[in-house]
Length: 447
Image (tube, rainbow, N blue to C red; front, top):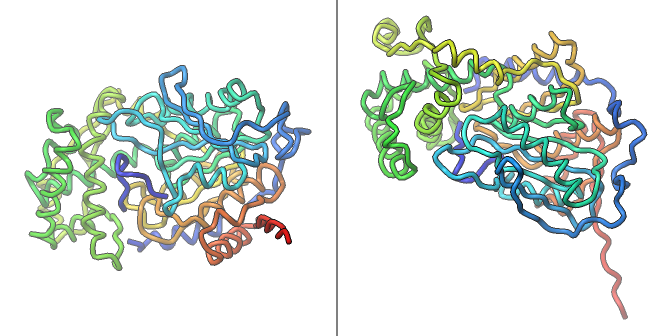
């Protein structure tokens, strides 16, 4: 699942292959589909409460009370259910905007509407590290649909990617939210402090191998350079030139940080390194401001994988996290106490949000006694949120089944090819779902 240029996405399968196998095995532990207790007796999809006339097809934009921008889109034939989309990390130096995310070139709103679901999304009231605050803007959308369009969706699904995947899990763990189920893709849901250290370690080790290439350091970036022009015109080209000049140093960097690349893609090394450093460049100061200090700590980290690990560990810059920042991070940590069914989807060789988040979150759900509410699906490839349409829709089909005890009905028009349609059915059936693909009837020919 890729996003446009305003949100960067770029991303070795060694021990990860074992972890992927664990996720596949864990995915088989699925409880029978159940109707949520507060929805018992609710009308089925297509019988939305209070729906006399379906809202006019198309998209409507507006502004939420928080100042966030929203968009609501209804299909020509609405099935009565609503999908709320939670977008990923947005560059804090840019203005908020309605997300334009897509899957294999298809806008998410069009896919959702093509399945017969209404679609709603929000920009959130701010960009940057807002996964916790974003839950309020996301929860406001179903209310807005009721009040602005005069309809009550039968079921409301929360779907999110990357940082939005974290917001999705946080919302589904919150007993007060009214989402019936959540679908989190490529989200940092296992251990958020470890995610922060993942970014910090990459920057620290990069500075050891390529000193002076990036401005600032792992915990602070000079504010005067934080513009898209500086990144696109100066620092990204400089990083690319440094990698080209010393590819062996780049190889050691990736080994030490255990960041995967795609061996079949010659551009993968550069794209992966610049993708991770994008977050160091734009997200470091934003995180410090929002958390009340530096959350990154590597004082006792032992780095391995270079040609000279002794020298690396002696010379690499060390940082101490601020207690206030660590305390603030607690709000971003998931508990595993799921209140509703949840599905997760993650690429096994994701360099930005590593796949280890999935087994860590699985362990949390086991510990809380909620493992049967979770279905974890791996996508065996490199990249951050790089999913195929069949993978994404198969996971959604599983969620629909878990929430409603009914199988998803999908229009054939959603799939660009018969091969993708068949792959979708295959993947969904592997997880116990039996979705149906329907085709529009051909118009009668008048003679």
